[in-house]
Image 1: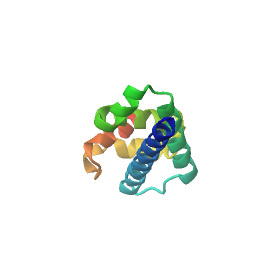
Image 2: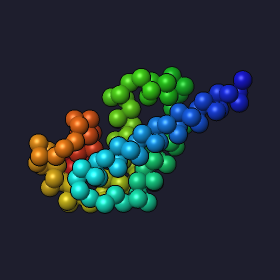
Image 3: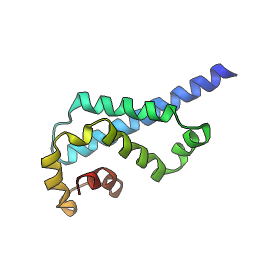
Amino acid sequence: MGSQDSHADQVLLDALGDEFRRHLQLFYSRLKLAPPYDSVEKAVRQLTTSIKTLSSDDQRRLVSDEAFRWAHYRRAFIDSGLSQKHRGIIAGLARQRDALDLPPEFDHFLNVYA
């Protein structure tokens, strides 16, 4: 049974890491910036490392609670140092939020620059 739980945990980590990576790619694409690939991968690793420390209940909550999941994406974005890359450019773009073609959940990233 433990092996199945371990496999399920890895599937969850992989899925959330892939989703986070896609969000970051969209973020940089819509800002018309080249993503700092090494830093993106560092942020994904930061996310998966932090998810591993969560309780089983909180890990399951990540799947069902979008706000909770985005809070973890934001934390990884900051803790990994990714939010420091292109900081000046993104801060300027964030001041013109209405001109950006990003869904509202991306405010979790943009508000870092406010």
